[in-house]
Length: 269
Ligand SMILES: C[S@@+](CC[C@H](N)C(=O)[O-])C[C@H]1O[C@@H](n2cnc3c(N)ncnc32)[C@H](O)[C@@H]1O
Image 1 (cartoon, rainbow, N blue to C red):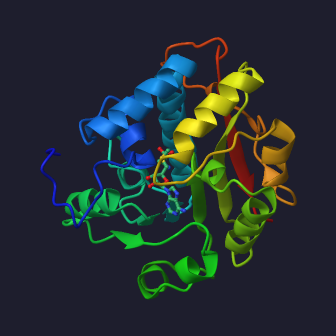
Image 2 (cartoon, rainbow, N blue to C red; image 1 turned 45 degrees about the horizontal axis):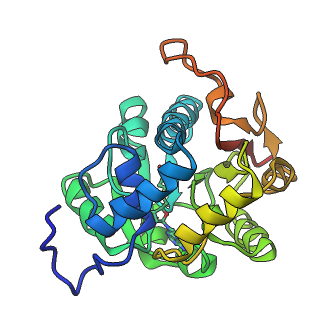
């Protein structure tokens, strides 16, 4: 991306959580305001980049596992800017017929994802807001592309913490889970306080308050586990992501000094 991206598409002066995340991952699709905000986070949470990479590695392992288990439909809410090993690439490497719907509310994400998917008829990108589950689930393109009477993988990675109200976050997950057919799976990750003290959490939250998301909230492990209530949670449970079925080929990473992200995979029975 170039700094002269058209102003009617994005506001380059307001940090975007999608572009900050791209920066953590070493991507180039970010503006000065995004880099500045991301650097502030890195000064508070020195392993922010590691947290982002660990989250992506979890995505790859979870999606691959589900594709190998026979899941053929994926609904990815809060997709993020395309990077390496996006959901459709991982899923379709295992099962070429796998269908993927990407949903995001960031115009840059939508533009890049549409370009990436132009020649992939089994994957589409839809503009939608996590906080409006009914409009996503009732979106004509979602309904045309996915058969919700059959199992899907509902993916909500590193996105629910942008819904800062606890009751609203629970309602959002509940509404997205409601129509899922048996055999569907919820794949969810979420930041927690990790080792950060209250002052560091406050400063980090202040940075995100000034972003496109308008805020962020780390939640306790118990609260994150509650999003899986009633699901058959796959082993090893809702855990720090580097502990979720680690790939022996991956670099071993002992703990997450400074911050943590946890998550897991739950099956609808
Ligand atoms: C931190 S990135 C995570 C990307 C990807 N899910 C991952 O885990 O690698 C968060 C993404 O969620 C999107 N997002 C944030 N709030 C959203 C909302 N209310 N509705 C839809 N997408 C949202 C952002 O635009 C961004 O692309």
